[in-house]
Image 1: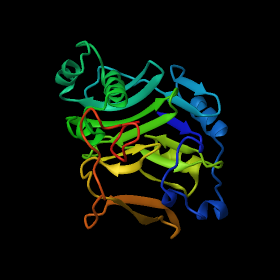
Image 2: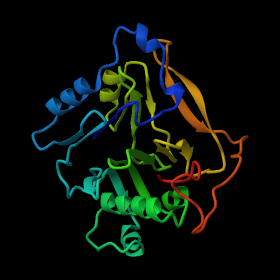
Image 3: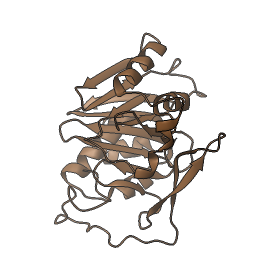
Image 4: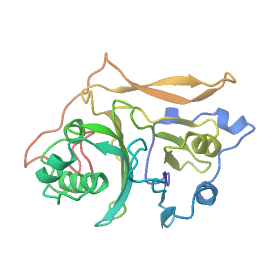
Length: 259
């Protein structure tokens, strides 16, 4: 899967960008080139959707959807919200029931409904919802009407995601490490496990929501700084937690809101 978001939509951690990309023999690519090369390299059943200059999503269905050993992948678009999901949720049935979805709803459908519930009514902080997910998962969600990006990765690293910076400053997210390396030169890193990223609120740990994140420089085999690993700073503490209840404005109430 591949997601590209214009730099005007998202403000990633500064440490993700490596100055070494400018002097590297392999330069970062522009979004159009990244997207085109990804689609050329994929089977004919690859699916893509472009949102003008704002964003682009590309998805490749699993070769054998019924394979137990192969990680599940889902793509879904509902009510101007699009989600690419990898992995599986062991408690999907109970989650669907909790959110009023049909038994046949897949994980991507659930994520969209959970997002819309928190965006519109905000009964819970986002980190609480993510901690209730039982399974291996990674997802990227885009609300094209609100211009909101939301991504998350489970703490057990059953699924892996990578992110980086394209030539024009756009953010690139994918499960394909080689694609990220080729596209972002030295400005890339693994997406941190147990964390979520919101385009307005930034990166935070949903496993340790009261702790801040810190960047740890990554050095590649050439001895060059290559993005950063992001870890929970166990010595830190968030200044405040958003309120829970009908009076809380979850669209504006800090790093734990979904939108």
